[in-house]
Each structure stands twice: as C-alpha cells, then as structure tokens.
Image 1 (spheres, rainbow, N blue to C red):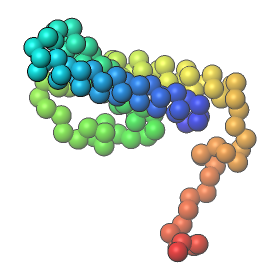
Image 2: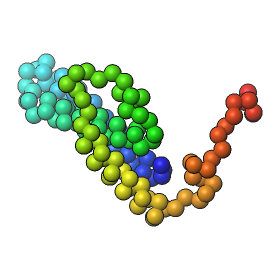
Image 3: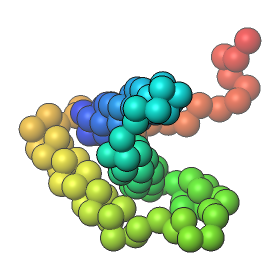
Image 4: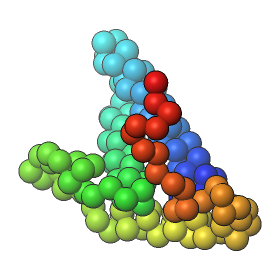
Length: 123
C-alpha cells in the first residue's frame, strides 16, 4: 500500500475516533445534567458505523480476512458488505492516483523487500 494512501486512511480513522470520543464524553456530561438531545446519540451511532466499516475496508486492503478483523459478531450486527466495498473501491482509486503522482523507487516497494530472518543480527 502506498504510504500516502495508508496515511490518509489512518488520519481519517483517527479523526473519526477523536470525534466519537469527544461526542461520547459530552453526551455523558449532558446525560448527568439531563440536558442531552437524541441527535447526539444518533451522531454517535453514525460515526461508530462509519468507523467500523472504514476500518474493515482498510484491514481488508492490507490483506487480512474478515474473520481476523472481527471474529465474534453479535447476531443482528452484521457488517454492510456494500459499504465496505464502496470504501475499498475508493481506497483502490486513491492508491492508483498516488502511485501515478508519487511513484516509489523499487527499493521502497513492499513487495520487493526481503523478509527479516529471526537469527541474524538479533541481540
């Protein structure tokens, strides 16, 4: 995966996680004060869903299987495959654009790296 693509996806995931954390904290405070609105709860559900599907697409592009990402899924909480496919397609387009705009030298490409063996040079 191109570093610019990976960084863009990770930044988006971090922004969603931060938004979720701040909104949940504010909601808890407002619930104690009994001044919360149901819009905040809907916002949390929307961001959680977006984060989950974005994370699933990111991991699938990195070569993980669905079972490795989410091994235990509660009944009725099945992931929306269409949304994951949409994110994956967007990431693939971004990946192609990044390789066209910012080609990597052969020594940097992940496919051509030699794997590190366990016994050599390890303290």
